[in-house]
Length: 136
Image (cartoon, rainbow, N blue to C red):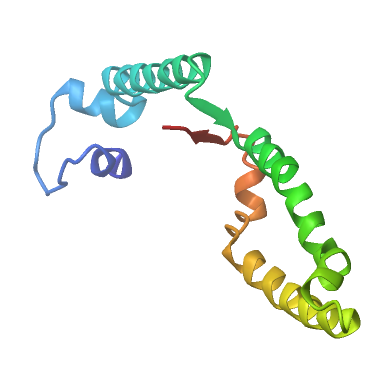
């Protein structure tokens, strides 16, 4: 009883009297407050559904796949650059140009990886809630 009264914000003092409604709220919970919370949650879910239908929200996994598909050819092009551009950079010594370009690529890729957002903790992903990415 004391825990319930404290939970609803009532201070417990010796000799203090409580209304029946206050005791009922402490024991059973506040139905009105629960209904308000449920209504807010329902409204929030409806808003997310509306934004998704209007294509202002994209599933985070879909967005990640889209960016991967977009950036994969760019990454492949960067990796192939030393071999494909070495003779144009230094026609007299293409091997020297290839080595220089390869060093640039080897330095650039780790720097690009550092700029990627860090993945969320595994337990957040296990929560079962669908992650959404808000667009414009």
